[in-house]
Amino acid sequence: NHSLGSAGERFIVQYEQWRLVQLGVGQLADRVEHVAASKGDGLGYDVLSFESDGRERFIEVKTTAHDAATPFFVSVNEVEFARERAEQFRLCRLYHFRTAPKFFELSGAIEQHCHLDPSTFKASF
Image (tube, rainbow, N blue to C red; front, side, top):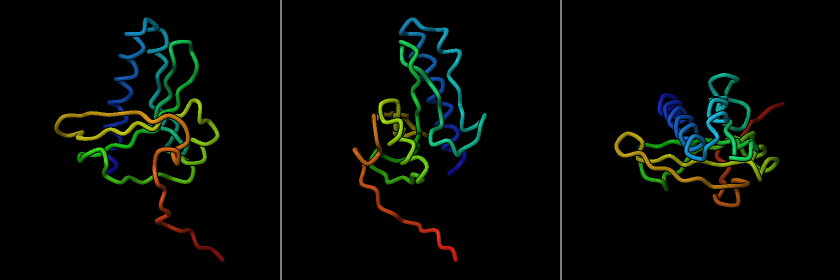
Protein backbone atom coordinates (compact mmCIF):
# COMPACT_ATOMS: atom_id res chain seq x y z
CA ASN A 1 0.00 0.00 0.00
CA HIS A 2 1.64 3.19 -1.23
CA SER A 3 0.00 5.56 1.29
CA LEU A 4 1.01 3.33 4.22
CA GLY A 5 4.57 3.17 2.91
CA SER A 6 4.79 6.92 2.50
CA ALA A 7 3.40 7.51 5.99
CA GLY A 8 5.96 5.06 7.39
CA GLU A 9 8.77 6.87 5.61
CA ARG A 10 7.65 10.21 7.10
CA PHE A 11 7.53 8.55 10.55
CA ILE A 12 11.15 7.44 10.16
CA VAL A 13 12.21 10.92 8.94
CA GLN A 14 10.79 12.38 12.16
CA TYR A 15 12.43 9.67 14.25
CA GLU A 16 15.83 10.29 12.61
CA GLN A 17 15.53 14.02 13.25
CA TRP A 18 14.70 13.33 16.91
CA ARG A 19 17.58 10.80 17.17
CA LEU A 20 20.13 13.31 15.88
CA VAL A 21 18.90 16.05 18.22
CA GLN A 22 19.23 13.60 21.12
CA LEU A 23 22.80 12.88 20.02
CA GLY A 24 23.57 16.62 20.16
CA VAL A 25 23.90 17.14 16.41
CA GLY A 26 20.76 19.11 15.64
CA GLN A 27 22.46 20.68 12.62
CA LEU A 28 22.43 17.22 11.02
CA ALA A 29 18.78 16.71 11.97
CA ASP A 30 17.92 19.64 9.71
CA ARG A 31 19.55 17.79 6.79
CA VAL A 32 17.54 14.55 7.08
CA GLU A 33 15.69 14.14 3.79
CA HIS A 34 12.74 12.06 2.62
CA VAL A 35 14.42 11.35 -0.73
CA ALA A 36 11.67 9.02 -1.94
CA ALA A 37 9.41 12.10 -1.96
CA SER A 38 11.94 14.74 -3.04
CA LYS A 39 13.97 12.82 -5.64
CA GLY A 40 11.82 9.81 -6.53
CA ASP A 41 11.44 6.22 -5.50
CA GLY A 42 14.24 4.70 -7.57
CA LEU A 43 17.34 5.53 -5.54
CA GLY A 44 17.45 2.27 -3.57
CA TYR A 45 16.59 3.96 -0.27
CA ASP A 46 13.85 6.23 1.10
CA VAL A 47 15.49 8.42 3.75
CA LEU A 48 18.89 10.09 3.87
CA SER A 49 20.05 10.53 7.44
CA PHE A 50 23.36 10.75 9.26
CA GLU A 51 25.51 9.23 11.96
CA SER A 52 26.57 11.57 14.75
CA ASP A 53 29.96 12.05 13.04
CA GLY A 54 28.29 13.19 9.80
CA ARG A 55 28.57 9.97 7.80
CA GLU A 56 25.52 9.31 5.64
CA ARG A 57 22.91 6.67 6.54
CA PHE A 58 20.77 5.35 3.68
CA ILE A 59 17.49 4.00 5.06
CA GLU A 60 15.03 1.84 3.17
CA VAL A 61 11.72 1.74 5.07
CA LYS A 62 9.40 -1.27 4.86
CA THR A 63 6.10 -0.59 6.62
CA THR A 64 3.27 -2.92 7.57
CA ALA A 65 0.16 -2.69 9.71
CA HIS A 66 0.81 -6.32 10.68
CA ASP A 67 3.60 -7.99 12.65
CA ALA A 68 7.31 -7.73 11.95
CA ALA A 69 7.53 -11.12 10.21
CA THR A 70 5.03 -10.17 7.48
CA PRO A 71 6.77 -10.66 4.09
CA PHE A 72 7.56 -7.55 2.07
CA PHE A 73 8.79 -6.71 -1.41
CA VAL A 74 12.21 -5.34 -2.25
CA SER A 75 13.33 -4.21 -5.67
CA VAL A 76 16.46 -5.32 -7.47
CA ASN A 77 17.64 -1.73 -7.17
CA GLU A 78 17.21 -1.80 -3.37
CA VAL A 79 19.09 -5.11 -3.10
CA GLU A 80 21.96 -3.85 -5.28
CA PHE A 81 22.18 -0.49 -3.50
CA ALA A 82 22.29 -2.27 -0.11
CA ARG A 83 25.18 -4.42 -1.35
CA GLU A 84 27.11 -1.44 -2.76
CA ARG A 85 26.66 0.72 0.35
CA ALA A 86 26.47 -2.07 2.96
CA GLU A 87 28.28 -0.09 5.69
CA GLN A 88 25.86 2.82 5.37
CA PHE A 89 22.65 0.99 4.43
CA ARG A 90 19.86 0.32 6.94
CA LEU A 91 16.68 -1.64 6.29
CA CYS A 92 14.10 -0.25 8.69
CA ARG A 93 11.22 -2.65 9.38
CA LEU A 94 8.28 -0.63 10.72
CA TYR A 95 5.41 -2.81 11.93
CA HIS A 96 2.07 -2.53 13.78
CA PHE A 97 2.08 0.90 12.17
CA ARG A 98 -1.64 1.69 12.47
CA THR A 99 -2.01 0.64 16.10
CA ALA A 100 1.26 0.83 18.05
CA PRO A 101 4.22 1.51 15.72
CA LYS A 102 7.45 -0.31 16.43
CA PHE A 103 10.55 -0.76 14.30
CA PHE A 104 13.99 -2.25 14.12
CA GLU A 105 16.96 -1.69 11.82
CA LEU A 106 19.07 -4.20 9.97
CA SER A 107 22.49 -3.03 8.78
CA GLY A 108 24.23 -4.14 5.62
CA ALA A 109 23.15 -6.14 2.61
CA ILE A 110 19.52 -7.25 2.71
CA GLU A 111 20.31 -10.91 2.01
CA GLN A 112 22.41 -11.04 5.21
CA HIS A 113 19.15 -10.88 7.16
CA CYS A 114 16.36 -11.95 4.82
CA HIS A 115 15.65 -14.83 2.48
CA LEU A 116 15.13 -13.29 -0.96
CA ASP A 117 12.61 -15.18 -3.06
CA PRO A 118 12.34 -13.94 -6.68
CA SER A 119 8.63 -13.47 -7.25
CA THR A 120 8.47 -11.49 -10.50
CA PHE A 121 10.37 -11.67 -13.75
CA LYS A 122 10.83 -9.22 -16.57
CA ALA A 123 10.45 -10.86 -19.95
CA SER A 124 11.59 -9.25 -23.18
CA PHE A 125 12.38 -10.16 -26.78
